[in-house]
Figure 1 (cartoon, each protein chain N blue to C red):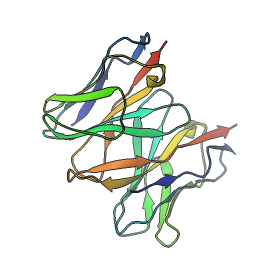
Figure 2 (cartoon, helix red, strand yellow):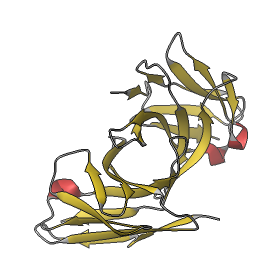
Figure 3 (tube, rainbow over the protein chains, first blue to last red):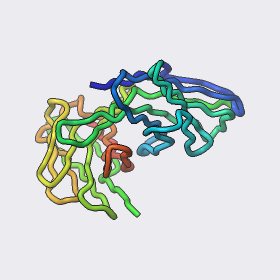
Figure 4 (cartoon, rainbow over the protein chains, first blue to last red):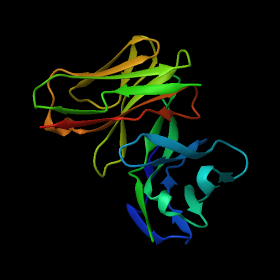
Length: 116
Length: 111
């Protein structure tokens, strides 16, 4: 079964500074990877996804992520953060089920706090 | 466009009481449906998923159950709540392996 590790539980960063949120997954023959953002007491919103093709994936709100198969990583980056980026970020991998569908395996999340 | 609803938004229940959380999806047919629980500091844990009416798969043994009485309705239930059932419950739907779309969630506090 797949597993996802988010190495940092909290990341404080000053406004307009760059940020990288780290995610590693267990290896698999093929993998679909996702980053979601969650604002307080809300559901999850998809930031970006990697299905195949280019290893650099661009998402919403200026975020991007790079798929690195050799390092089994999918780190999320933003060159300049805003106060409004303060939220919790979840990395997830899609894992096949016995029913022929897929389920998500989530990391434990990284709380990004942008400081003024 | 598709939308997903969950209710109630918040719920406070005593230990030993029953539970029923509802999730409905609009604008799609025969979606895959999922229930997740988010406990403080523990990320999201998949509880149940369903690929069709009456078809429920359980991921984690517990005192919760799920049902899918209609194509776009997914219900999470318990006969007797435990303190450890407190958390944020998220329903999601998907049409393929590629994406899941999440509802607004239900905050459950068991006292």
